[in-house]
Amino acid sequence: MNILICGDVVGRSGRDVIEELLPNIIIENDIKFVVLNGENSANGFGITKKICEQFYELGVDVITSGNHIWDQNEILNYINNDKRLLRPCNYPVSTPGRGYGIYKLDDGQYIGVINVMCRLFMESIDDPFNILIKIIEEIKIKYGNTIIIVDIHGESTSEKMSLGHFLDGKVTAIFGTHTHIPTADLQILEKGTFYQTDLGMCGDYDSVIGMKKEACIQRFTKKFIKTKLEPASGEGTLCGTIIKINEEFKVIKFQQIIKGGKLQR
Ligand SMILES: [Fe+2]
View 1 (cartoon, helix red, strand yellow):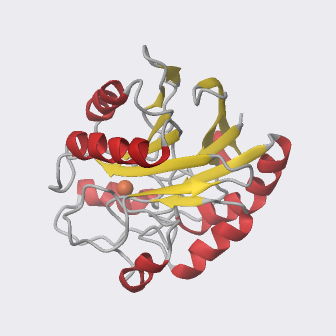
View 2 (cartoon, rainbow, N blue to C red):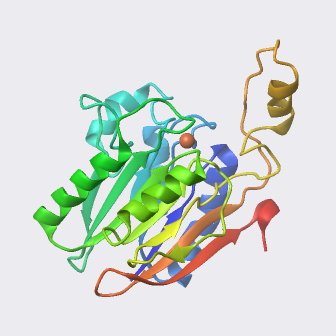
């Protein structure tokens, strides 16, 4: 079975490239399940109900997120009603929404998707290592051995790689998000789990991680001016990875997808 995971969708450029390319990628690669990180899809900051619905319409099954999940106020009232929209599982206990979900495919196969956030160079949040083990145990008790995919939303490559090796053999695949830069370290770890430090973003790469470059440079060079960041609006690149999973829920093949815009190969 083939699963596609797409990196952080940034603004209109990201949404446009998803709309333009995703339906064909799904057909051409016989994709059965699509996960996409949508936390920057609403003008670079957060996500709305309408955008969630647009993604589902295009073939997305589950939307993951991260530190920007709360940027649009409406999401607080919406997130509890949408089981396919995840927020990091290691937010404090009373946080609205859910950090993981189990989804059933037409053929009866269950897929668990977990969204977690790192702590290094990010906001203070509960221990990701500890909570992931608890959730994985919970899923295995309820559903037995099944496909589990983890979106690790984090800034630091070392924390993501540590989480990767920590979970090796316990889940099917681990994908990093948040840095908006695709990494080339796709691999099957020692105990059989697929790992990639960052999927990269779906957005305009003629930018600084999806934002207009002039404003970003100004933030570094003119600290005395408050500069508003806005998403770059040029042609977007879709960044994602397709994994092929066998009947033992192991990844047997993987392919990085980088299509459209500046990074087109
Ligand atoms: Fe993020």
